Length: 155
Image 1 (cartoon, one colour):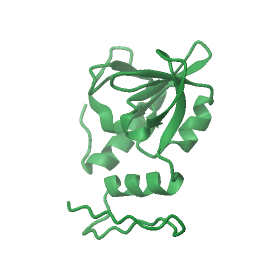
Image 2: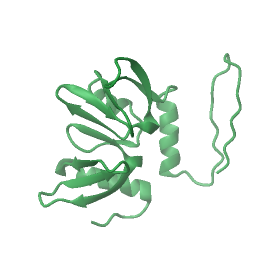
Image 3: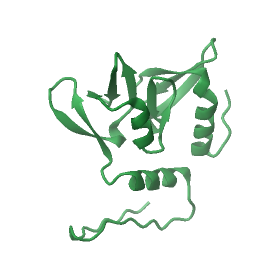
């Protein structure tokens, strides 16, 4: 796909135009991300440094509620934020998906999953991290993945 970027004056409103053959779930995610926020990042504190940083959505593997804090996991850094998980879930783009009461994943980093004997799924992210999809969220995750792949999932 060819991408064109045109820098405009600061006084003009930013806009985006897509010339596409078909509206796919990927395009819908991009549009959703663009519409939800002009800033495509979360502000969070690095756990290794005591400073706030911008964490781009595209770098976030998953978010986890643990010990009364929200941790944001990227490929190489863990961040912390005080925003409640339900608020983050509402504010994040559509490719972020709740898989349990305490975890939201970026579906773009989901590599594979397997069924566990108790009915849960074990999801393996592209950074080889394993997270559990609770039974309550299995069917909605399956629907979301079917929407992305445009074919039924078998497991």
